[in-house]
Image (tube, rainbow, N blue to C red; front, side, top):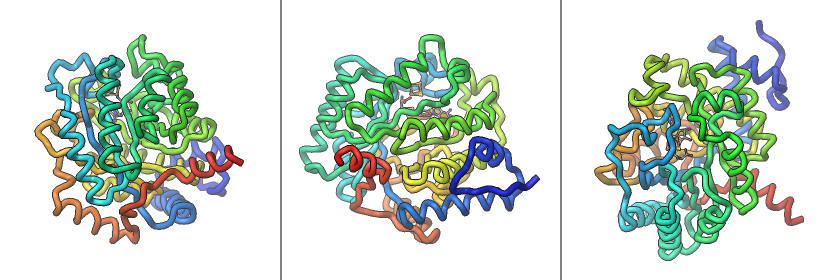
Length: 359
Ligand code: SAH
Ligand code: SF4
């Protein structure tokens, strides 16, 4: 039954109710309200982050992820420093203004030094002109600090689910929820713009879980949110146990989460992620219309691209090919939005947070 909703002041019960809404008109209303909120706080602009997937080697074994260490049918790769810097320079020359560097999780000295060297290399050619987001998993405070000093200003570490019990069902016993939480604290203390997020549509996940995830983002004063629908990968325990998904439903849940995070947190950066695009060719554009304001086109141009496969059906099109870029640009313009080239697109929430801290 339809109930009166104050979209700007949602309660936990409202969130749970809206996550369960199935009526198409009512779902469209949620997206429209979220989009209005996005316009109010951010305007009709979209920030690009050129995404460089630097390695698919991972010491962890998350039950959902295609590059988990237990999957022996992956061709493992490391991009070279030269390859990474070439992509970074390409992004800079094309006015992307921000990069996102992502990898599997490693905590050995060689990897930590390598990431630091890349950051310093990027700074050398670009000055402080590129905003850099890292997404390289759980690390010590000292490592986060070193990478911060070398030039990374944002970090994305998804909590995956804010429910401790549910987290345990998605990960092996030695993957500790409290450690992940502690890492978010370390990132905050070392001065990053802190990003987190969850997957939606996981087997066993409830609307209560998702509502609590949204509340978690707010309670932890998160600056950026990267979320996406779970998509099964055939070589993972979760994907094998639940090989079939309803694409339409997964997409809808992913979009609803974006919309509700926008309505509940208002001034954070929210990415329309590749997982949406895996479910629908225009999934990311739909994400923008549901309240997202960031797109992360993959910009690495090399033979390893097809090996960074976290889930089945991940699009591997050549996003930095001129034709593709122009098509995405045009699709965004058609929505009444425009890409804010040359603008790093720092989180508005973070700007207010830091402003507040300093006075
Ligand atoms: N290793 C780092 C970063 C790479 S993984 C980390 O885990 O933080 C980036 C994200 O991919 C994860 O946070 C997870 O939310 C997402 N992911 C992994 N497997 C997925 C799947 N099967 N479907 C959708 N998203 C997935
Ligand atoms: Fe590794 Fe991240 Fe995949 Fe987990 S989600 S297996 S940490 S790459």
